[in-house]
Image (tube, rainbow, N blue to C red):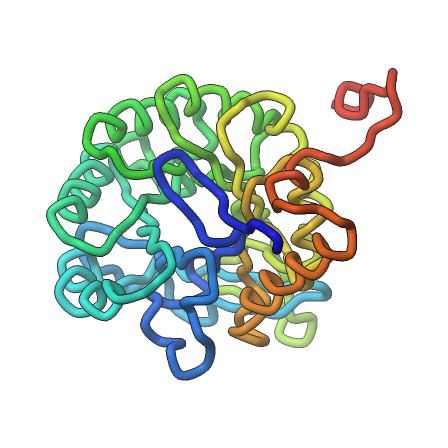
Length: 314
């Protein structure tokens, strides 16, 4: 029997596989397609204080090995989520993690405070890839000082798991991980999407209305693995690995380089049951490798002694 339970701060997961924010709706849309109770957890679509329409279309474009999106954090707002969505999630036998997006530190605090008054949320993932309107639109996630400030302000507001979702669009992601760990984050999830773009050569127009967007899918998996490995060498808090996970082999790679859990994202658009298949595949892999607990896989990659793989190119 393989033990699959994983602990992320105060959050207990039955297995290390979650579905990523923005790829599984609010968690109630896929009940007829997949048994979500077989997942370790669901991360909801981003929630802001007020409803957001998001960016105008076109806002999704396929690319080789992935997809670009510029959804613009479209969502129903936290009040409607609590009223209309959360009741159907309370009976789930997997963790429910609310992803929070905001345009000011105060808005992050307000959204989390409202969610704290409701039952059914087990933890929070804080999306810092948002424009800070008070600082001229600078993205929170590319400012280490602001990312730390958000964590510092949110930590006293909840005893539930507080997870900071980090952007790869910085020079040293490990510096951001250290900053949020120092301010009390229970975990970090990484990576968010990589900035990319695509052009229609016939119309000579960008394929997204916003010109650039976030690249996700298999194309970014090597980048994500390197970032997770970098952070695993820098902090002791758990890491949730994200980026192009399509198969059980992909997920195991993330565990081996230091992730305690993984999120399946773009693959859900192809097959919503991918996460469940991966969770079962991890158990099969452990049985084949005579591993009694998934925890034994975390950070168990074998590196030749004397090699400094990060410092050699950073």
